[in-house]
Image: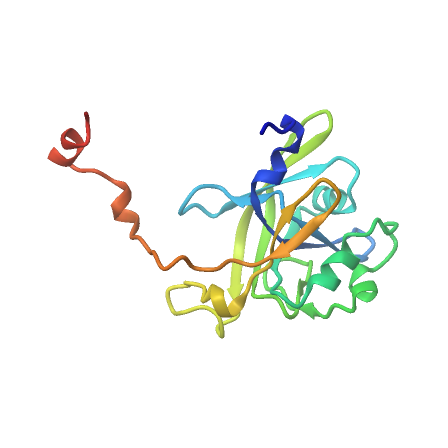
Length: 200
């Protein structure tokens, strides 16, 4: 079966993040985001894609700051409230019943009840006709110690970070589940004779 190339988002399991910002006037904004990713490993930059007319993008451009909040299962309703196209003068924390989480390095607050908070500053905007790519630098990263070990590894089966699968008319919220297989990063690299032995 073939799908239209424009349906490419339906073949991915996508993360669900809440991006929090503050306008120049001090209005708090929170918006759900799935087009977001860390840039390679182990760098400290992230990238998100945005339509041009978004309050989040306007706030990032004007203040140079934003916070990536990782919501767990149980925050689906708040995520959906924040997805609505409220006018920029509306405080979406109040609309969704969200409580602010103190940020150390940026003006925008995080969101209480989330699993992690990545405070970011704007590094670069790559502007296209219909969308913008925002590259941000994580300047402070905080996690809920109830769900992360000392090395920063998430206990995802208990934390249940939200993800989603998109469809033609809507989305389904999901969360990750282990397969029983783990692997060390070193397994990705062949060395010496191993390289030659893998060549047919």
